[in-house]
Amino acid sequence: MFPPRLNDARAPAMAQALIEGFNRHYRLFRETSAEARQRFERADWHGQQRAQAQRIEYYDLRVNEAVVRLRQEFRVDELSHDTWQQAKLHYIGLLTDHHQPELAETFFNSVTAKLLHRSYYRNDFIFVRPAVSTEYIEDDAPGALPTYRAYYPARDTLHATWERIVHNFQLDVEFENLGRDVEHVVQAMLSELGGFRPRANFQIQVLSSLFYRNKGAYLVGKIINGFVETPLALPILHGAGGKLVIDAALFGEDDLLMIFSYARAYFMVDMEIPAAYVQFLHGLMPRKPRAELYNSLGLQKHGKNLFYRDFLAHLRHSGDRFRIAPGIKGMVMLVFDLPSFPYVFKVIKDFYPAQKDTTREKIKGKYLLVKQHDRVGRMADTLEYSNVAFPRRRFEDELVRELEHFCGSLVEHDARSGQEMLVIKHLYIERRMIPLNIVLQEAEPEQMAQAVVEYGNAIKDLVAANIFPGDMLWKNFGVTRHGKVVFYDYDEIEYVTDCNFRRVPEPRNEEEEMSGEVWYTVGPRDVFPETFATFLLGNDAVREVFMAHHADLLDAAFWQKHKEHIQAGHVHDVFPYEPTRRFAATRQRDIPTAQGAHHV
Image (cartoon, rainbow, N blue to C red; front, side):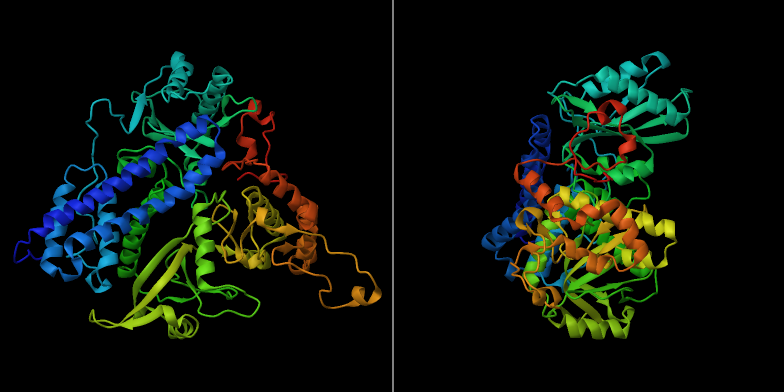
C-alpha cells in the first residue's frame, strides 16, 4: 500500500467513529451472550430463542448506524482516495491493543462496502488480509477470566476435581445430584482413556465460559495426557424437577463436530477475546474451518469474511471451472458449484413457474427465518453475499447463459480491473451435500433403508422446532459426510403453528370419488399429510421402510398434536448426540421430546 500524499484532519476522526461503532456492537453482542446464563438458569427457553434471533440483527444495525454517522459528519462521498487510506492506517493504530481486532477489521470492511464502489475493494481501502495479529492476546484487566482454566488431578482427586470444575461456573441453580453425575463423567473418561495412566503433564483444560444453546449449557474442554489430547464436552440440562443434571460425556473430535455442526443454531458464549476461543476450539476440531467456528459462536459476519478469504485463496490455487450443479434443477434457485470446492452457490431467479407463488423478497425472508431459527441439526446454515465478482474465464459458457437467462437482473459483466469479471449482486453459499434422491437411487438396500429412516427423523426434528418444510421431496434434502439428512430448500418453509393440517375429506358421491381434480376447498395454509405418499413413496422398497418407521408423518393428527404442544408453549429437546450417549439416570426420566425424533 502506497503512503498517502497528504494529511487530512478528518481521517483520525473517521477512524475513531468507526471503532466506536464496532465497540458499541461488540458490547451489546456480549451483553446478550452473557445474559444467556440467566435465561438458562430461569429455564426461559422462549427468551433464549428471541435473544438468538435478535442478536443476529445487531451487526447490520450497528453497521448502518456507522454509515449514517460517517455520511453526516464527514461527507464521505466527497473524500479522496488518500483520506480513505489514512483513515484505514489510523484505524489499524487503534487496534494495536484491542481485544477483538479481527472482528473490528471486518466491521471496517462492512461499513466501507456500503460507502464505496466495489472497485475499491482492495488492500488500500479494506482489510483483504488481517493487519493485526490475534496471537497471544491477553485480558490483563483486574479480575478478568482467563480464556481457559487448567486442572491437574491425581488418581485420588479425579472426582473432586470434576466437581470443582463444574462449581467454578457458579451456576445459580442446584444440581440434582452432582456427585452421581460426576461419577458418570469420571467413569466415561476412564473408559475413553483406557484407564488412568497419567503422564507428567496430565491436565484437564476447560474454557472459562459455558456455551449456551436451546435448552442446554455445554462445558467444553480437553484432556491432555502426554502427546494425546482428547476433546470433551459435557451438556448440562434442567432435569424433570427443575434441578440441573449432566446429561452425557462426549469425547473426541467427531462428537464435537456434531455439537458445532453448521446445521445447528449459533451458541451464546461470553467472550472477551473471541480469537482465543477459536484457537482453542480449532485445536479440538482441526478439520473444521475457522470460519465455521466463528459462525458457531454467533460471529457469522467475521465467519463470512474468513470464508471469502479462503475462497479467494482456493481460486488462486485451482483451475477447474464453475458449472451448473448436478442434480434436479430448482424452480426458484439457480445452483452452481466449483467441483474442487465443497460448497454450492445459489442465486434467486428472476421468474418462477406458475405453481410457485412467491417473490424474491419472500424467498430472502425464508432464508432469514432459517438464519434466526433453531436449526436443530437439520437445516444447513447459509452465507449471504452481495456484489461478488468472479473471474469470467472460470465459468462454463452454459452456466453463464443460464445465469443471464434466469437471473439477468442480478448479473453484470465488469472489465475495469483488467480482466473480465462476472458480478453476481446477491447469492447464498451452502455446504455441498449429496442430494437424498441420488443417495436413494444409488444406495444398497441397507443404506437406502438408513437414509429413509434418517429422512423421517429429520422431518420430526424440524417439527419439534416448529418448522414445516413445505416441499418435502427427496431432492430438497441432502446427506452430510456424517450420514445425517439435512434440509436445504427453504423457499416454501412455514411455521408449523401457521399451518392447518387436515385430512382429505371423504367424497360425497361417485363423481367426486372418480374425479382427477381436487374437488374439495383448499386454503392457502392447508396441508394434507396423507397426500405426501403420492410423491414420496412410489418406490416399493422405500415405501416399506417409510411405513415401518414414519407412517405417522402421513397422519394429520401427528402434525396437529405437535402444533398444539408448541402453541401451548412447550419447547422440545433435540440433542446433538445420540440418545444412547445420555447417562442412564437422566435418560430414565424421559424428558419430553418430539415423538419419534431421533435426537441427532
